[in-house]
Length: 244
Image 1: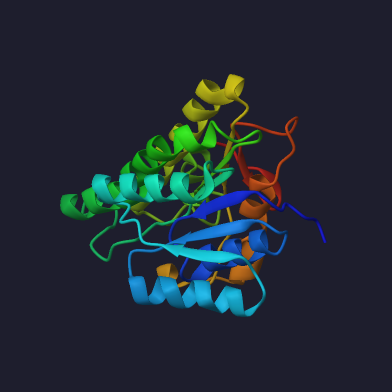
Image 2: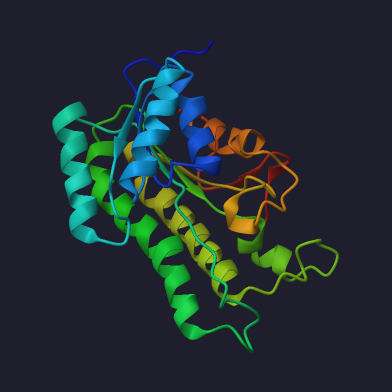
């Protein structure tokens, strides 16, 4: 088994679904995983589950919508570990009031942007000083095929009919964050990519996806463990590069 002992990873939204599996697979390589979750009971239970499997998992309760909470989480990581090697911005939501541009509730679109874009931006900014302490910093932003402008504009795509003004736009904005971060941080040795996990069966889609969370975690885990001379500033799925 590949080992990454002494590395530290933070995964937001790690108490279930893809986030839990990312934590499990990273910890399986020897990484200490910090599992972020807003709900203390569920987060602690998820970390205990992985510890029961012999993995080094810790629970941390950052509210990704609260700047003070994010700052406290960064301070706790610095105090306990001194640095951060991997950040996976996984926490995300959908909204029942989202829909086509003609009918999506503006408040729903704002809620989606708050969690799917502004939260990863705030978490990344807070964690960057810790990532700069790493010799091989990695940031993985969990995106979606629905965040691709090319996919949204391609009538031949199976995702073309999915008209979710808020969700799709928030993931497209997250992809822009990836592109700009990768360019800004390239000289700092921090590699940034967007992950497209595929259509995974999770609470987010009512478990209608055809991939398991274990399968969906494989791409972000691979991006989190990239060597120094690998891809940077890309949008990657299991099949390869996804068009922006």
